[in-house]
Image (cartoon, rainbow, N blue to C red; front, side, top):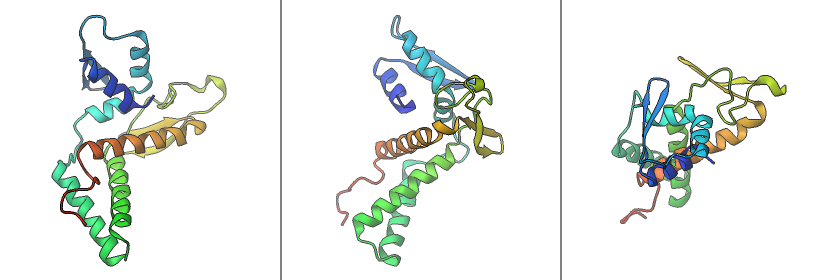
Amino acid sequence: MSASAVLEGLHRRGVKLRAAGDRLHWRAPAGVISHADVEALRVHKETILSLLRPAPNLWTQDDWQVFFDKRAGIAEFDGGLSRPEAEARAFACCVAEMMNRTLVVSDPDRCVYCGGDDSSGDRLLPFVATTTGHTWLHPACWESWFRGRQGDAAAALAAMGIGLARKGSR
């Protein structure tokens, strides 16, 4: 289950989440949070915290639309792509940009994807370096974690209406 799926499921059941430093706080109706929910929150804690924290250069929906439209226009008019191809390329650029703007810094003793440690002989390695730390993963977990991040970014953009066919578009 991805971090976005965990968030969506909890939201549907009335759970309110917030980031407080490196801690995740929730408020929920009685009996709504299960042991499986707590485990899912533990496994995806770093990703969920990064999604809940205000980002330093947080863009509005309009900012994302301008970014998308500019890239689609360049790909179509300068790159010679059809409009659907240009929009697909622009959406991929938006996904990459969102991933760059929502970096995950994780505990060096736990894989940010599976929650495991070094005890199994599968070493934890820093895959993403930021000015504030690293994203620690088992090498076998990296691809699934990366694809999940792409999916989370694409879902966030789609929820804003970025990249979806708009009335009046060609």
